Every structure is written in C-alpha cells, then in structure tokens.
Image (cartoon, rainbow, N blue to C red; front, side, top):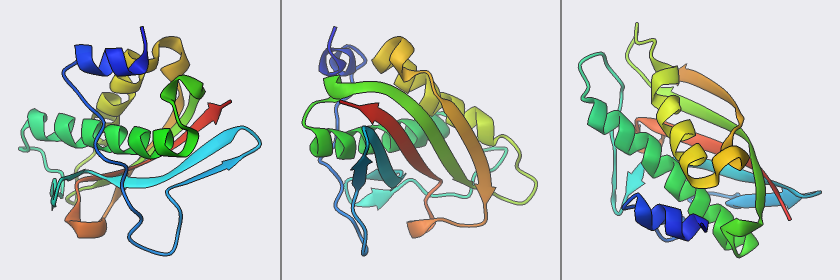
Length: 151
C-alpha cells in the first residue's frame, strides 16, 4: 500500500508544502539523506498554541504532533517528488513549548513516531530526541525536524 493510500485510510492528507518564513530552505538533500527544516504545528493560518501543560487535552497534543509530521512530509515530498522514494525515516527531533515543570515531552513525540510508523511501516522506525523549550515561533506547541534516507 502506498503512503498516499495509507494517509487516506487514516483519514489524513498532506497540507500544501510550507514556504520558508526566513532565509533557509525547507529541505536539504546531501548524499542520499534529506534534512527537513523544523515544522511548527500550523493549521492553515493558525498555530496550535503552547505551552504544553498537565491539563491540556490529549487531542490537542495528538493534533499538534500529527500536524508537524504531515507538514514535514509535505516539504519532503515536494523536495523528492514522491514519498515512495523514502528508504527510511532516520531521525526525528521534537521541541515542545512547555510550562515549567512539564515533563511529558516524549508522550507528545510518541504520537509523531506512531504516525510515521503507521505510514511507513518498518521504514518509519527511527531514532528520536524530545526536548522541552520555553517558546517556539508563533507560540506553537511543537516544532519537529525530520531526517530521512531517500533515493
């Protein structure tokens, strides 16, 4: 089953590829490795706001993680032409805008990891870092970077 078919089966679709909001490119490919610039959890014209806190609904955290993954995959697809050219997701780094004392960064990133594995199967299994930060662009809840082996 193709990545597009899996997205459809999950009721998801890739957004338009995000345009850079600064002096950088969305994706750099070097020696078969694609480095996707950080993607904030932006839906159309709004950002899912942080900071993460203990009483935040799980649905908000899941939506933020999935949104970041879909935006990263959209940027990657624009750069390589077809997500079927992804040999493996190598690494994911997530920055969680969190209140002091919030420690559940990895639970938020688990949602991003889960989606990548649902879409890519074994090729979606990856190394990962989850970090808490005091703020993100647009006061976003999450920013995600992705590294993939591509052909």
